[in-house]
Length: 210
Image (tube, rainbow, N blue to C red):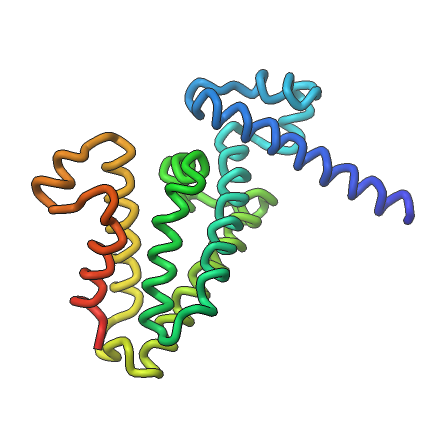
């Protein structure tokens, strides 16, 4: 291994060490209360070194979200072999997405706070997150197309509009639950916390199932 390769590996390891430290601090204290100083102390690095790798606390949050997105994709892909149609796969993705909020609540909470907005094409952290997001939407649209081809999804629906609506609904429900607004969910929307999947699945059947 050459010097250049070794330095690249050391740099990547240090970057991962910083993300590890930020993850622990953010998950324990919450994003608002956490500080870069605390991240630096836990990572045993100077504050200046942290800023060499990440331009802001928001940038660190985006790096953690990238990890969460990778875990989400693993949930998706582990579920797909058991599904027999495009619609079933889309249902499975929805179930996995809801499971993600229960299995990885800290990642989910941070993901609800920081979405894919204002990504910087010149920034490594932004581009890594954008890559995972691209994988996510590529999978969604391929499953939707599969459902149209196998006859389980109505070909007349606009897939971009439907996918945006379904995922916007999931995020809205999860956000209300995170805020503790269960009365609104149960009284006005007739959603019980344990039945999120059934509610979304019923909505999907009405919107797109053939």
